[in-house]
Amino acid sequence: MSRLQLSFFFASLLSVMISIGIASGDAPLLQLSDLEYQGAFRVPQGTIGGSTLNYGGTGLTYNPARNSLFLVGHDWDQASAEISIPSQNESESFLEPF
Image (cartoon, rainbow, N blue to C red):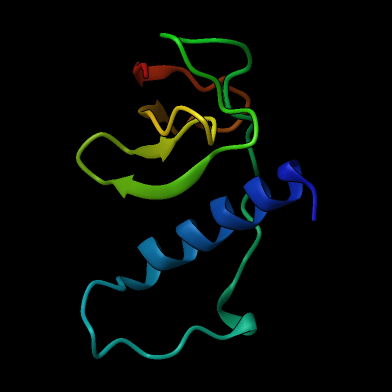
């Protein structure tokens, strides 16, 4: 699976988790039929604050207070950053660079 396909998958999965309110250990098991594609976006490119998202983008965590994602950058750096989740037809941006 390519990095772009993984980004699409995790964005979709995140959307489903938020919409069905998975927040406790007694939540139902997620099924394929629970997923609904709602769009995708690309993460920022290039070096930002000394790291990149090349070979990274792991440790994905949603921040509902800012409708954003925390993620880990390049494997060698293991720096974390926060990016916005854009509305449709908008671009993402760094809220907290590496």
